[in-house]
Amino acid sequence: MLIYTLKRLLYVLPVAFGVSVVCFLLVHITPGDPLTAVMPIDASAEQQAAMRAAYGFDKPLPVQYVIWLGKVMIGDLGTSIASGRSVLTEVSRAVSNTLILSAVATAIGFFFGCLFGFVAGYYRGSAVDRIASALSVLGVSVPHYWLGMVLVIVFSVQLNWLPATGAGPGGSADWTWNWEHIRHLILPAITMSVIPMGVIARTIRALVAEILSQEFVQALAAKGMTDRGIFRHVVKNTAPTALAVMGLQLGYLLGGSILIETVFSWPGTGFLLNAAIFQRDLPLLQGTILVLAMFFVLLNLLVDVLQTALDPRIQRA
Amino acid sequence: MAVGALDGKIAIAPIQVSEGYWRGVVRRISRDPVAMIALVIIVALVLMAIFAPYLAPADPVRGSMLRRLRPVGTPGYPLGADELGRDMLSRLIFGARLSLFMGVTPVLAAFVIGSGLGICAGYIGGKLNTMIMRTIDIFYAFPSVLLAVALSGALGAGLTNALVSLTIVFIPPITRVAESVTTQVRNRDYVEAARASGAGGFTIVRVHVLGNVLSPIFVYATSLISVSMILASGLSFLGLGVRPPEPEWGLMLNTLRTAIYVNPLVAALPGVMIFITSISFNLFSDGLRTAMDVRQ
Image (cartoon, rainbow over all chains, first blue to last red; front, side, top):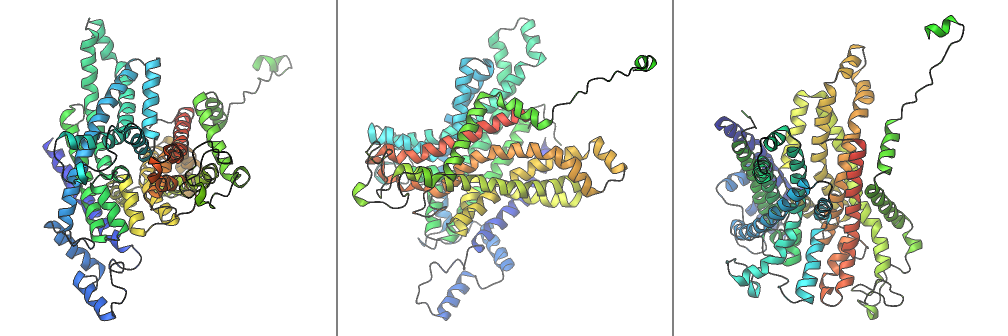
């Protein structure tokens, strides 16, 4: 177990290195250089050169990369061109908002996904199974940004029950756990929970059906165990996979929140990315993507290690 | 036979024509009602895209400020008018062109490139495999939406850039599937036998490997079309795909966002089209997987 964890940690290093290279190059595949967009039109050639030198854009790419990586290592993600604030400050504030939204959405998705998955797996082929399976197909096929719009139309515009945009009253961007803020969380969280719900339900349904067809279940029934007791065994057997899928889904939501955050003007990383793209704020774009990708890499690592620890059937060394 | 030969008559056993693989697939899938309904919808959407100029009652681009946001059912505007007074029905019909094109092209391109990379990695193995697969791992470290947005954000908005970014998003998963099935096939006895009988590497790949790996890769690729449709329209929704005034469902959804207070039904229509397309591709792909008996 310890050896596996160490090995898995070592394997993360090259991936993390590759991710940093991709994030670095992202800014350099843009037409022109990162400063073109913000340079005053009447800037003289010398002024332009001075600005390039100030940002270090006059050096060769590998040198720029090493300098950039060195700064990233000590937590310096650069300065946002548009706001003049440090990228790290902006990103960490946004990440916490996105994390709240994705964690709540994953929890909702996990609950209903398990519910539908177990019901469908247990009563395979029945009407309940068909409904639960249909719901999970709908969940994975729906364009969630559109679902968000529909929920806003129904619950904000028509019924006027819940706020349509923002994370708190008066466009507050700092999260606190009170009713005013939670009201703002409900619609985006439900919208976002649809994808993990569908994925988890599909996974659990297949798993439950597979477990129920195994001999040990028959053996348990034969020795007189109650359905409830057997159910406990089934749950225990699905748990490692279900938790792994949930972890990965949380990662996908964290990285993929941009569409939903745009619909609901949620002040998270997606919103930040959107702003960075349209203001051509490349340091901010680069920093946000790097942080999100690293989150995803670490989450993957955590899921793998936890799954190995939880499931004694997985023998890894 | 031996007996027949003795009395001068040779009985010939009736020739058992075994059913071809594809014929079997077609037979099985045609008995799957859900997949067939999905297929009919997909074909209808494709026909709608091809014959858009003949089907659409009005010009999808020309609008009239006087007729902004007409509700569904207005005479002359069966599905209402959008925020610039353009006929919604015509725009939805023409929108099928760009939306389907943007959804399907990246998966096709990624299918060709990803299969190529994966089969090379799986068949040749060794250092090449390590090189290709470790590079793929790096792209796998990005959630797909993030990668698509990051690439098209960095490249800049536009149809071509959106297609390029989506293709890059779908290459890694297809390569992984291609590599894993190729590695399995490579170790089969018939490949060994072909090699022993002197077949060259190219012949083995063409005859023995491709025939056995392409269908699982293809089934996997079809399951990605639904995701691709949602992502492609999502990029346009963010303003990173097609530019106005082109009719594209995601972009229409974006420009109609402000209209949800005035005319919610019209504003939600483009999303319905994306939803129908995506779910049809999903259900058809599920049916295809069962019919082709691909286990993943």
